[in-house]
Image (cartoon, rainbow, N blue to C red; front, top):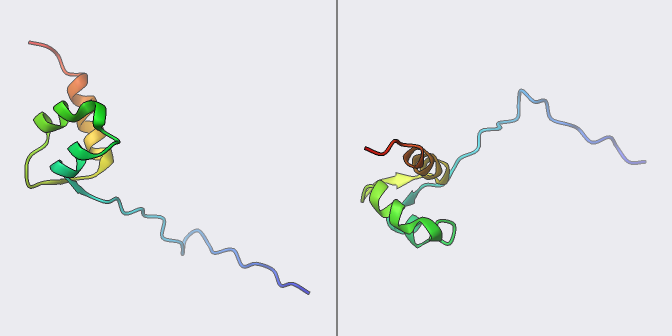
Length: 68
């Protein structure tokens, strides 16, 4: 007879997701951002590490900015 599967309590499960960070060069060279290489080169700083979500937010914020 098979035993019941134990389902972990939601309180004991660590649901934090660790996001990888990438350099400006890695992001510019990636296929994910191949259509936006120029904007990445302008927005990101050399020597800093960024998550994909942070970069997408920066691009979104820049695109919604007002033209002077």
